[in-house]
Length: 320
Image 1: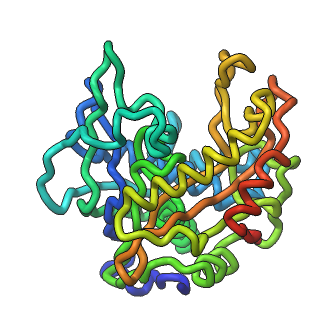
Image 2 (image 1 turned 45 degrees about the vertical axis):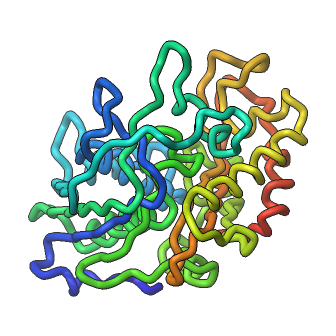
């Protein structure tokens, strides 16, 4: 999966990409209604994956370059962004099931509702949407390459909406600049990472933000290869649930805060990302990414070694 060349862009100033929604996307408006995918949501995701692709920068360097590219109160950045849905959809509320013992419900805590709150609406799987990045005249070729890497990383490893790191809202890049993008394999993931990650990556103890590092791992396990997304997501959830249950409660903080009876005031997102992807054969697979970094300035007891049983179970390999 080589770099998708910028000379394939029709006018040199626009990158267009088509994405398929692989698992239901819980992306709502102010009333939690699943009505649309908005540019602000996509831009936020691109910011995250741009940071993830630049783990060689200091926090000061990162903030300065991010503000220049994406904009800040001092300027508007080097691009604008538009999103278009490629079809009509009817919001649904039937998954994950309202069964606390189901592994997908375990992964989607808060989505299934309770006596006071209804089941969250979602944008259904199988929908497509298109993202277009329109570069301003100030954008350099390096800027365009950097943002295209972020767009591709979002399509390969990212999800969108609530519980995105738990495999909900999984998306898949299917076309970029008019070029079909083949489904991922372990080999193509490794090749893409080798082609796009910077050479001077830091380790997890040096990183002050979530990004690829010398301690990052990924896996596309053969054991998760199902006929539908629900089965694939359930298998991912079962593997995670089993490993997490084997860890003493106080040491589960590595999978994110707040954590009941351990620390219920601090917030820290999980360094483990789960998603479902579709293979070229039409089956559904699980993709897991582990990106550790400094955990939290006010919480020092998180132990990343607690993730090792999961990495062994899924036969993860290093990203770099």
